[in-house]
Image (cartoon, rainbow, N blue to C red):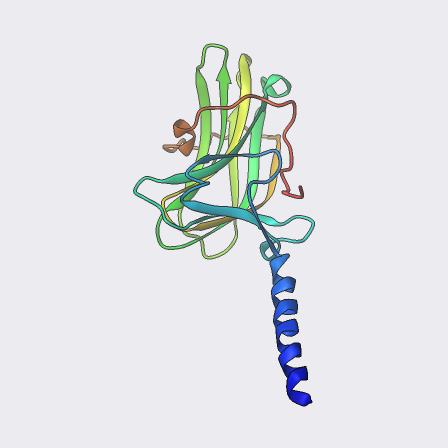
Length: 199
């Protein structure tokens, strides 16, 4: 009699354990963001509550079968009208796990002639969560403005606590060789969305 109870109880316990952890990770691209590069083929992405909170989970991009020079990124593009003539700052917390590759954050603008202006921040493996800050002075003739986060090559990137605000100072951020240059800027929406990945 005891044996059949044990046999029934064991799968139920296993189900309960799996179910409790299953809710912590949700795969896919967050609402308001667009996936770029090999994010759908050579990378995995999603939201992880264990690296943030249920209300504001961390977003991750993780390499699974990457080739040379592969990259994965998420971006969103909005109308630049509200930001013209301002110094804007894109901030976040980032954690990159893995010995190879690295990550990048950027702000990019484009005007009606297709001219672009960009500020980006590039880093490699981090032992703990790191603060990332990117500043860009938005030109008076800017038409679209893009925020982007990307991973190059290997590793797993977690990001959370994103904000996009007007900066008080205009100290320049050195420009790297950004992933953004490999991405065509998409169509613009009205406002930035879902910076805390709650949707």
